[in-house]
Image (cartoon, rainbow, N blue to C red; front, side, top):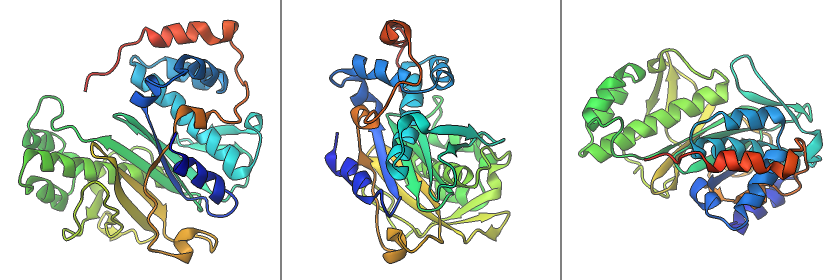
Length: 306
């Protein structure tokens, strides 16, 4: 585990609730004591959460689902200073998870998983969304132009122009992923889930700001049906050289938030591991033989081929 990210969550838990964290699927799968940690993890979630994770065909998706739920529980445990067993989640009608217990919390959080990472973002306000993408050079065996054309209904005219005007196929796809992350982050922050017509959401990008690993861009704005949505701040960055990310958070934040005291604050994604996500976890779902059947079922699943 990268101690700086874990210590940050511990140190700020009493005041600012804004954090950006990620866990690698590959590192988790190859970590020491993974079998023991996996068997502990499936018993530290509810039976419903475990059943949902087990339904995925691929090992990557099952593990990502488990890690995502652990992220939400670990964050709640630390940010609210409560026992693991007291934490309960519900879902809105549109499928967004929310805290039922503890109630009346003043912070929000969200998770995303794609490629090698499960990403987590929290905020000092209730509404926040995060999305991440693996920067594949092509998708569905299509060239960049063909793929962008096939997805054209999801983009506005200016977004299509920006994607198609990039010099290389790789840059065209990177800009596609950039816009996709932004759209997903906004929809997750608003709680809308899946908007039938994604072209209604349009993003204005400042071309003078270079979009690359280690960037931290907050100048991008979003409009819905042509009307500027000025209540949001969009953070664009990268988790690593192969994964980009976007966070959508509310502009108005309480005085104890680091973004209120210093609006130029940059919170990059830090890295944690499964051991960190299991700290303080207790058994919610006791399984026969300590979860050996769940482990064998997981181990028999194939990996995704990227």
